[in-house]
Length: 127
Length: 288
Image 1 (tube, rainbow over the protein chains, first blue to last red):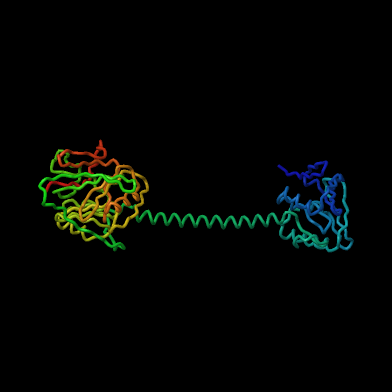
Image 2: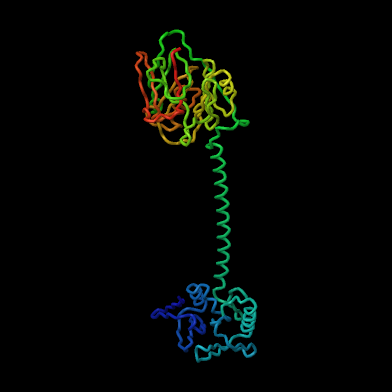
């Protein structure tokens, strides 16, 4: 049975399958979760708290997600394109029609590139 | 991959710590299990070693060098002031332990195998001597009957030897009195040691039962029985408190026996067995 992530705000609960989440963006003490259909959900906790919730609820399945710098968590399954010099990352998949172009620091993208290259060698990450 | 400190250039996979912790805890658990198994094996080994030493039927081997010294006290139970043979029975209570004390007069002790004849008026006291193994009905420990060694073994370290009308009570795995009993057509049996030189000897059975003892007090051999069920410890302490210097156990509980008083009335103790084991053994005091 696939796991669901249950996220609560003061007035709402979002129950979502992890594969529907494309990325989570930090906005100070708030976090915005974007789904594959471009739905957005704002939560009143920061990205570090979001990260903890994902790890607590998904356990080792949380390895689908990658923390990218200070303000971004991305679903590693949907990494389509990374351009370090342009500081650009595109998240996309054949299962959804939308393309999500995000910007990140050069250092973070460089590190991500290394992680992805290493993952090909070690096959350790579930992306 | 860097550790989690949320710098701008930081990239890491979520949940990777969980796997690492899991591995760590699995390794820890593995070592705990290995340690527990080793501990259990060690404890089992010790238990087996101890039980082999103390419980194994060691009846058919030559005793090796004993760490214990055999201490015996020898007495002769002859009285010349009276002609009549009988057993005097008195009671005494020491530290809430009521005791029956039997003293024989003008009699000598020997051993029998098989139930003594109750109609034999020359027997003034009879009580079961050695224990019998449940599995093969053999007598437990060294047993010599009129110079013939019937069984061998030192499962119980207390002993009583009767050689040329001299009774010896002692404690030890290896005693020359065993060979002397064989050579002089004497008697020898083994039981739990209770008192040695006024010192209490602890025994393993912890249950309560009617207890009996063959004891030495004021250089006189006496038999003592507890009126109530007692632990080995409490009974033995009571023996010491009434002045017993040395004692070994006699079969307790419902073990059947009797004594003849001054009026030659036969008084029984214990319960008569419906099926009498072939190797049942008795100490019997007979008219001299």
